[in-house]
Image (cartoon, rainbow, N blue to C red):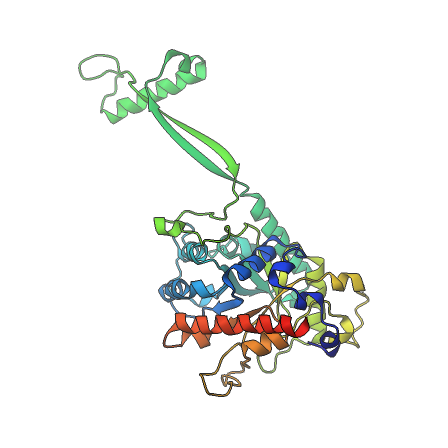
Length: 398
């Protein structure tokens, strides 16, 4: 966070997540803020495990403590791509059960037509099971617009769900009043004949086949307010986290604005372009993966010498209410100093530094939970620390 932000912090840093619901334009962002308040959690688990069974087991165990589960489907061995019973569908069921959103860390970066297909088609069909994904916008802002269009078209294809009712009974004469109905009856006679092994339209005793009962299937179409796009095979998969409704069908994007890896080439000019892209696409962009809070930020704070030919108004900047997620969060064991890195370029931060000082909303934790002797207990420790950091920030800026 810049000096100017420290002296005059943006309003979104002072408000509670519940208060920020009103200022949010994205349905999924509003839902996430509410979910965070219900669970008193601002924790995301980066579930970078190697096998699908480990991913599902970890999500089930740690799900009660988190509000977001971050995945990398393409590094998972044994990922089942079946749309109804595969790994994505099972993750979606666990998300409903425990109350969290799925964030596929795909980092899209390509021309618009390509990312549209990568997002909505192919083997993984990410849009169907991941509430959130992200993008590196080195390919330009047009890529973000293209992804937004793809998500909207996908959403428009599933506005209704089919309700089917079945009734069985003996047909009456007025059911066959028209020619079309008589044709249907004749077709049913043919089916009955085939099933009973006769070909003449008569029973084995010489009498003409008749229909003693008919099954009526009635289908109606109702708005699909539930995001259960696919039905899994177990009744347990239909469990829904209490205290809040299911997440909306809307999909959201996080723009990868900054990274924590040592030597990262994402400079201030790039980050400013991310801010502009987010402000132009508020209907799809939920926020950022970043190392600082970017709400209300001006170009001069990121890239003062950059001439982009555009200028943001103060009103536009003040309207920012983007959600921020930051990786590299790690707590030291009790009594030990905070770790500085993993030796592979990752720089670690404590929840207090990320949430209270730097102003992120959600702390992303990976190996700190995954490699713990008791991952559920460690996830709870991180949840408590991250939530306290959020409360401390509000108290400090009040």
